[in-house]
Length: 93
Length: 128
Length: 161
Image (cartoon, rainbow over the protein chains, first blue to last red):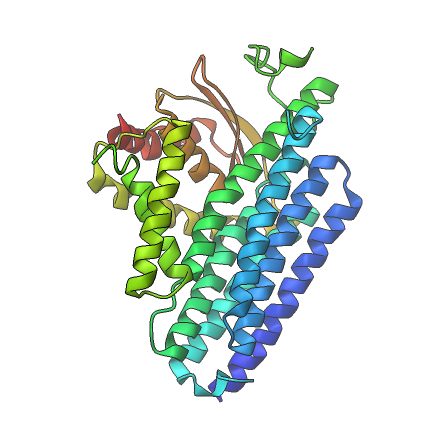
């Protein structure tokens, strides 16, 4: 009984996270300005990281954790670089 | 489905609740991101996913693996700390970039942007 | 002590991170310690400002306050998003005069304000100590200034100054 509930709520939360990624993708596509798109990228990678964690729970393996950690690291670096680019027009000065 | 059946009922229900809570909060945050009208309102939306949403899902993951392997599995704490520390930094950088762009273009935005008091103190004018 | 371990807090957290990523065993404790000490030496070559923490016992109080605030504003902001356009929201900027000058304390304040849904740190002018934040649901401007100054600034000053 409780296993069924867990499986269904895993499915539901994965669907919700995919919907959240769709909302972020909508913001990336529509803009209207560059900073809105970067904000969308920021939300998108967080949702992708959480989705990987739910995959990890679903398959019962901790290997997804490493992938989630790498997404978090690279996502932070790329958003910071993009924000810097918006401010100054170049990343490395 | 390996391992899901071995979980005791209380843990399974708690993990399920935390998963739904976390993903619901994340979804709400991105709905706000898609619906709000101005950039400065949208900046608030992703923090919902990175504080409440990520927190709930990471606690669920920690609980799941700790109960399953009957030893504390705490490495998700790393992601929690990392997300909590980095998201404010990126959002701050983005907000500063946005206000800088709005001021240089003089558009001002819709929400009563305050004037550039103290902005021309040499911090941004180095390139001109 | 200070020559061998220039940044004890950094070394300890690197070691904890190493042990979390791997398993806790004697070999990993040794390897993690070597890496953490080497990294703190590398950090010492960069010569960053060393934060001085005066009141350690107040840090749990700060963490507790931040967690409570994050929870409360999560509820508040999700309510705002659910109500959507029907609710009258009044987003706006608030200028807050700060007397806090310690750079580490300001960085922590920035993280707290931005991590709480509903408030975002926009800009800080170091020369006049004025902070510009954006608030999603701005009802009472003075209440926000009061909140930041009494709830966080005073506590951070007690911890760091």
